[in-house]
Structures are given as C-alpha cells and as structure tokens.
Length: 203
Image 1 (cartoon, rainbow, N blue to C red):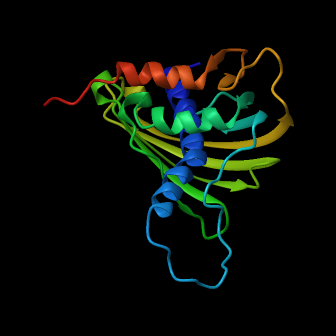
Image 2 (image 1 turned 90 degrees about the horizontal axis):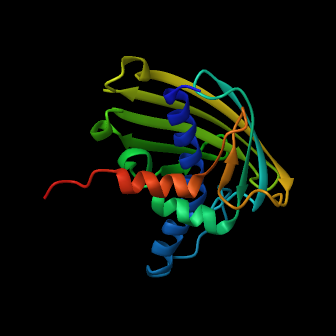
C-alpha cells in the first residue's frame, strides 16, 4: 500500500470519527447557554451523530483507498477519544467541521497541515448518510498540496459503505481496524502517536 493511500484512509477514519464525536462539543456548548425560545419541531440530522458500538464492515472504493473490505471495532469511548486526538493527529489536523447536508446526513471537512513532516496540506471533504446504527455511506475527496514527494500531491476520491455486523470479536478491541491485506492497527493509538510527533508551534 502506498503512503498516499495510507494517509487518505487515515484521514477518512479520523474524519468519520471526528464527525461522530463533534456533536458532543456542540451539545455541551448549547447546554451551557441560556434556554432558547420554543420553536416548532423541524426535521434535521441528530445533534450528536455516532456510529453504533460494535463491529463495522467498511467497503472502500476509489483511487485513494485500498480496494476491498475493512473492519473496525468501535465503542462510545473510542469515538469520544478520537475527537480529542483527531485535532492533533495526522499532522496538526483542525477540528472537523460538520453541517447538515440538504439532501440528508452530514457534510464534513477536515484540514491537516503535514508540512512540518514533509507531507504538505491535505483537505478532506465529504458527505455521510445513513442511520449510523445499521449502515452508513460516505464519499470523501482528499486534496493534497505542497508535499515534498510529488506523487503524494493531487486529488483522490474515496467512497465507503459501512454495515453493522454485531459485537466485536474477541481478537479485536475498541479502536482496532483491519484493512485489506490483513494489516491491523489501533486508530486511537495511531492518533495518539501522531499527536506526539506533531511539532509544537514556536513561541
């Protein structure tokens, strides 16, 4: 697997988990504010989108991801922790910006500045739909510029379809992900390690 593909897949993983956790931050801010005037009910995406805890099968397609099926084990704690590490992982990533998608679901955008590590700047934008309890679908475009290695620059588009498979198996702990080819890693541990490696701003 190329480094470019690995970065693209990592950004998508962080983006989706950042999306599922970001609602907690918004909700906390609203809870601390004065009550808003009552208004008529409206149809909107849930305030705190979160994937159901358990094993998810994710099928990726596109020029920026390993083709085939990945599996990831999630729980609420992992999704909450990724919201903390996600802002620092993969090279000083900004918090994931989210908004309701007019056609249903959520739009998300994450910017990661990896220039200090020679990776340039990557912008991941996409749309996620689904009930998040049984299935979801996503389409993400990752644009990388300024990387020292020329072939890492460019635009890749990755689509993903997730299906809930039930409880995680005994050999997978929350945060574990197995990608096509059998490589297994823990997303939380990877994000924490990346955060430690991210150069601190001067001053």
